[in-house]
Image 1 (cartoon, one colour):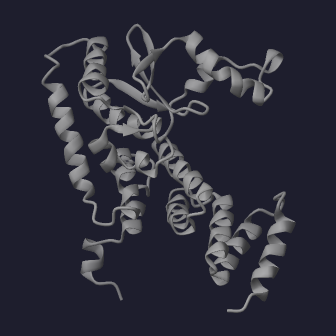
Image 2 (spheres, one colour):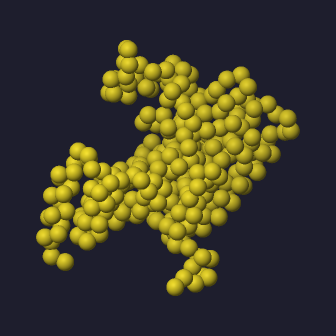
Image 3 (tube, helix red, strand yellow):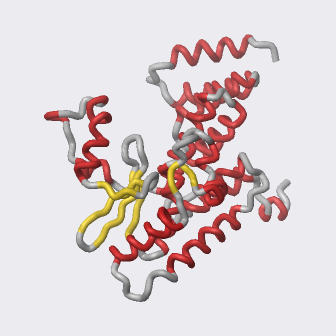
Length: 285
């Protein structure tokens, strides 16, 4: 039986689930900050939000009333990238801490998407029409201004021209055969990314890191959040099931792998997963 205390003190997963339940009004900053509770169980997410509020108050004091949007953008970039020194962690790009906002606010070093989450909160707090952009291989931010659009690399603070963006896209286009008659305009890669997709990208970055390190316990924690965020992402059940198998829990592995099989009848790896289920069932309990 649930008690009143359970509702006042939800588990970290329960708290995350409550934040991402609906797309409308999904609090990106709070949900992104909450991801760090897996690694930092004593983390006070409200304290993280308060730290960002303080940064916003500071940058607002630099913008007098009726400042044009372009000037607000310049002020923000000077404050964020130059004065505070936020930027990419070029020395240890694959450190999981780069994805945790509480650490980022302390070290001021992160990866493009985590830097973007903080930057977007400040930009929107200044009344700028700012969005995240799921650019292939490198998350960006953009601001729509009266005279056009500005695209910024949150890793460096650099504003990127159409030529810069086309150059960055070239390897991706060639790798996927998007050349000549199959080419598409740069603008199609600059669509705004919904908050749910931003959170999924943060979690999948962590997933890749933990997978490469064979850190199954941390990987499962990330998978738990991904499945709360994207309950119909059946491949995430498969991946969590395989991680449970690596952890030696055949029962939970089978449950997840069977869910994957049941929901993806035409999966290319169906036979391989069915064989894995049979192997797991033969393992001693």
